[in-house]
Image (tube, rainbow over all chains, first blue to last red; front, side, top):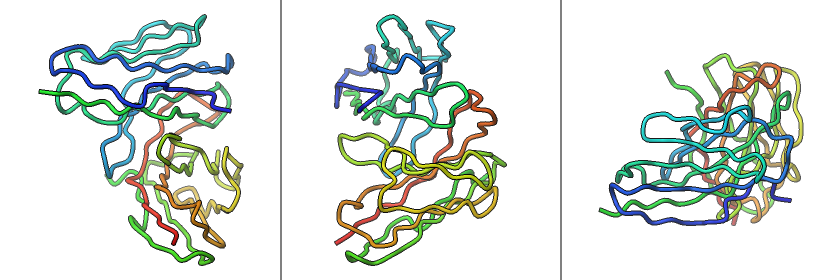
Length: 112
Length: 115
């Protein structure tokens, strides 16, 4: 039972444009969400997070939006740069629980 | 600052062999995790340790055992390796006291092939 789903295995975007990565979840108990970025042969690194009490969080070129009623979150990258080419994972947590549940990942490719 | 260190980085095992993957963190984190990454499956939790002296099963614990040796170290053991355990293994740590909202830090991974 995949509680966190990233339905797009890959995404290709032109440099300078907006990249939008999507994530859906099924467990309404999740109340904290994170995005991780992963380059080949490296471990995932934390990118940005959002608590369920918010609907938006920004950090430079990265913005995460949360729609609790739809159980959906998205990561926007503006403008996209070649260094953003990586696999992006969304993850979710329940307060008081220790587990982070990850989605399948989306491979983002930024084309020059 | 080393963060989370995993050894070895690569390993090839024959079916039935055993091995231990080592993980150490220097961030004084309470919680430590073992994940495996497979194509199309994302990161799946094998085992985790919420604090020193405790361990719990994750989503895919079968075929694995873990030991939280001390606060710094969390090892993953394959007693009898199977080809289905061919994967990339990641160790992570987090300062998750009481399940607080903090991010996890990952090691560089161990690429394991079982033939």
